[in-house]
Length: 77
Image (cartoon, rainbow, N blue to C red; front, side, top):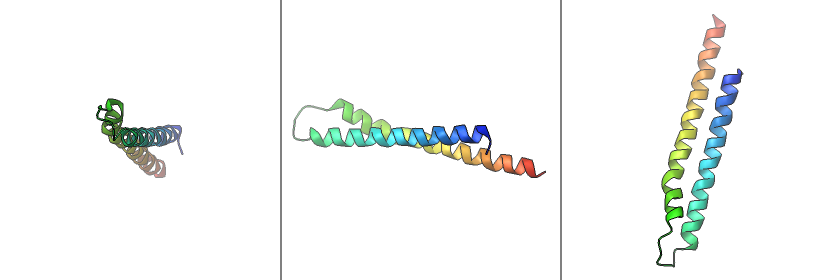
C-alpha cells in the first residue's frame, strides 16, 4: 500500500468516526432536552451536519479505494 492510500484511509476512518460521534452527541443531547420547551440548537446542528461529515468520510474512502485500484493497475504494466 502506498503512502497516499494509507493517508486517504486514515482520513476516511477518522472522518467517519468523528461524524458518528457528532451524530451520537446530537441524538443524546436532543433526547436529554426533549421535555423542555427551549430549542436545543447545538443538538440540531449536530444532527444536521453529522450525516454530511460521515458522507465526507465515505467519499474519502472511495478516493482511497480508487487510488489503490489505479496504482495496482499501473504497477502491473
